[in-house]
Length: 291
Image (cartoon, rainbow, N blue to C red; front, top):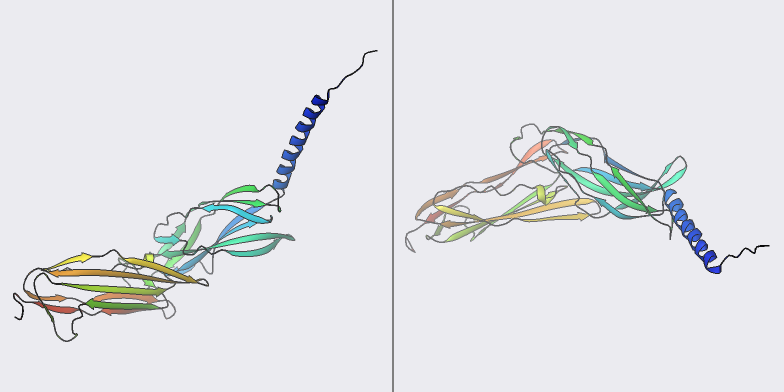
């Protein structure tokens, strides 16, 4: 009779294969238990004034325990500015067919700048979600559905200019040196004056506030500084600011008048256009000091 011999090494090798297959299969099963989804929607009606902040909500959803490796790149929007002004996320839950889904919400803001129908193109969203602690996370890749918005243009506003639409707008201007309001400032050729203007608006990013329009005055060479732009977000409320400065150097004797500068903005709550102005200033350049 022949004796069947099985080596210990062979049994160990087979055991390692079976264990490896079991671990891999368990990881796949754990990952497969997790479902995912995304959603892009407007926070309110899909109708807005041009220049008005529209909040969009990008929701990442999963039946799993946690999110990781979230990634998305916002597309360019023709006729508007789409941006993420705050890195804060909101954690929510919702029920679908009796099952609890975790929701990770990213608020995104859109500033439309032309009338008519505006489209936010589809863009890719990726994230991982795990069924629980120590479980293998599953990678999800989705594309948002295009989102459409109807944009109204305020009556009386010029469509060729960038429109500021806000419930609150503040404008501060300062000349250095400061001329008197009722008489020209006397200077010499080569002297310089600087105008600094700061805009502050509620619910508007500083990135979309218009630049300082610099009047062209023959005999005064203008040099603009790079703008200082900032945003402040507090409990979901956005306040944007922009500071511009221009320096004029007087090239020759004479009288020079810098005209007033007007900033036009639209108050959506009252549905009216309003103006804030930087007063004009006059300068007399003498050929010699004291003349």
